[in-house]
Image 1 (spheres, rainbow, N blue to C red):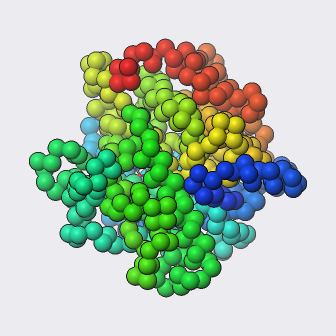
Image 2 (cartoon, protein in one colour):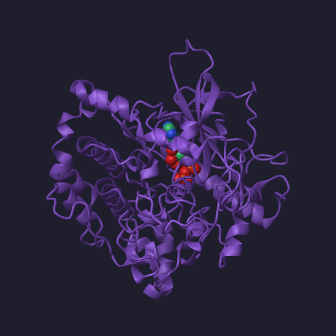
Image 3 (cartoon, rainbow, N blue to C red):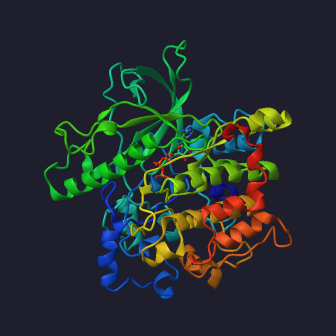
Length: 515
Ligand SMILES: Nc1ncnc2c1ncn2[C@@H]1O[C@H](COP(=O)(O)OP(=O)(O)OP(=O)(O)O)[C@@H](O)[C@H]1O
């Protein structure tokens, strides 16, 4: 396998999720449990526990594997080896992403090659596909699923067919979805499926358009279809404790995301426009309160559509002009500032969850006519599956997030301020945009097999082990933000301080869409 193939191969892996040790009720107060946690011996993490390890070595590692039945190459077993079945799309097509004139937002193309960059954005020989570490990167977590994987074999076994998407039961089959507007539930929208545009650990995302093209209330929309864990299929008994436990966690995750989205309104945050089944909005128990004898009901969330894809894809092209990088980061800061001011923590900030409203080519054109860019937002923050409402002084205890973005205090398993863990992740994002690599990856200069390569991301995070490479000699004010975010929690910038930094603050007045 060539370096490029290895690079493209990695592109097909969604970012892994960290374990979640617990998943409290929507609105439940985690600090009630904090007391207990503090009272007992706080979990101590020694460096050794992470040595050469991966996230499965964290206490209570959990697995939940992306494995959409629609995605031919998503099984790690199948696609890990040369000669494994590949999709209809040739991997060479990925080169289209680098062409500004290409139809780069033909989302189904991007999907096949959506790269999980384990190390630097640039390919290197350390990205060997079938290694234990690359496989472990595919492990994601289902909140609260308490299962430990120790060996590579267990990882492989556990990753086969672990999720499924129920067939839509909405009237009018053949890709036509009926959804009810959140703001006016009496309004039913009929939408036609166009193509798949995204895949996450817990959902497949499709582009839809109104069946009636004269429909003016929506145009193109993204529909997020929830994938349920295989443990909840018809073959499992709904009465078994295991089924009920998984069901309850999935239900809480879903209601949490939907409840948050319904209550949030900010231009730089994804909008939940409609849903196929209003029970998911109106009930706290949209799954367990029903008769599930015939399986789980589909959950299809109709969201605002971001034609530019996610920031991971954009950043992977390494073509982001400085002004655009600054603008994107500023809008992201505005979104987080809004959330934190409203006492919501996101807890899963990462490049993949920052969506870009327009294709790069359009953004560049808009930049030419400065006026038009200033009046439109270009970022929408997505994926609120791990978000949480907090009290002003409340600490969180749920260990969650995505591997490269998780703060040291979450890794340590101690109660943490969700807002400061969000700003840590913002530091990771800004570093990644500026340096075109993730801060806690092995240094590109590290020799394979030597200590720096062998030690895990978690190990480097817990030691605050990152450094400037490309920007080593630059005096960009953005560097101060990164340095103050990827820092100990008592010295870390909160969102207000990031907002007040000239790198962000100076351009806020130019953004007409928030004035
Ligand atoms: N509104 C949208 N417009 C365009 N693309 C989208 C939209 N929503 C999601 N996507 C694409 O689908 C991917 C998965 O979406 P999302 O992160 O919401 O799913 P998830 O299952 O919750 O993911 P995760 O694995 O992070 O939990 C995103 O990374 C993005 O590429």
